[in-house]
Image 1 (cartoon, rainbow, N blue to C red):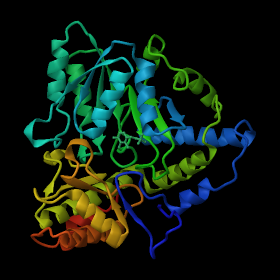
Image 2 (tube, helix red, strand yellow; image 1 turned 60 degrees about the vertical axis):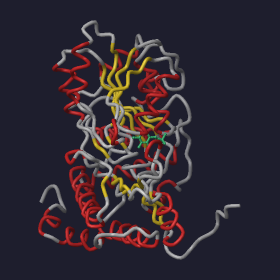
Image 3 (cartoon, rainbow, N blue to C red; image 1 turned 135 degrees about the vertical axis):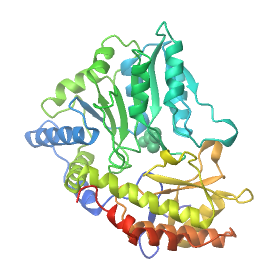
Image 4 (cartoon, rainbow, N blue to C red; image 1 turned 180 degrees about the vertical axis):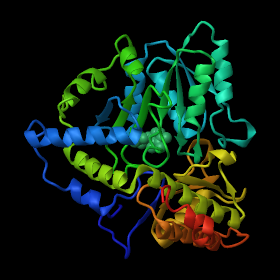
Length: 406
Ligand SMILES: *Cc1c(COP(=O)(O)O)cnc(C)c1O
């Protein structure tokens, strides 16, 4: 039996790419007393978080906050905009893209899966060119939506959403653009309005540094228009009533009050640091992490050098080494959790999360745990990744990358 009160000395290193560690400030905010969700105080909280979250999505349009996991927000995006039998173009970047596609099938949509990964597995970003070619061929406009994962958390590959927008425009195609940035929001630059995204799906437990339990949909006017005729059945997920009641800061049902306290605190932290500084911090730590992996002589799962994720790094283990053995060693010896390989890449790679409430020393400790765990597991390393990462962090390049704006 697992003993939930087991508490080894020091803190647990939660270095999975979500849930990410929740800062004490946010935990304290979550512990405020639960209030009347129809009372006057609540409306002020509701209006604050609804306005703040728009800044993070870079949108002027409504953002819907659900008491749900990210998976629920996926369903909300599809069911509010599409009808049974609609063809949707999805893109196989990895495990999460595959799960979203399976959901589309279950909901009665007809997903077409582009980008079959070929012999080298899930290692690439979305090809906007392939999307453009497919849309050009669809002269009858049978395709109703293009669905892509911005930051593929199973592999550590980030796709260029602006390029996908340009591809849709170049093909002069009316399809909606639906984007999952569940693990990208508040960690990687994201521009819902500028990139013409119709529905952006996100969640609380990654870059927003909250516990799991909030699902998000940022919606465009075109998406709201589509929802008026979208035929898929929905009730709980329906945007209409929520958007209407949100105007005064309330919800049609009981929202997760305490997580909204946490969201309010998280927004203060992120917006005080400055979104661009938050993004630069993630880029810099990710760069240091890749320096470590290269020094070890191991391969980075992402094979496109312009698509490295600022959120996590996928590390491939040598052919004869089960990545889950390394993870188990690291967990048992150093009390650190690393992300497992999901789906097709199970056992072939592990994932180091460097998102949310992460700084130089958090990353260095995580890398030290990885390096010791790899050595204990019998992986022969070319050199010390810890030293390589430190060298980068204190180098002029690593120092000047500290802030986006001086
Ligand atoms: C975490 C994640 C999900 C799933 O979110 P849940 O909160 O676990 O339902 C979906 N897509 C991506 C890209 C994710 O990182």
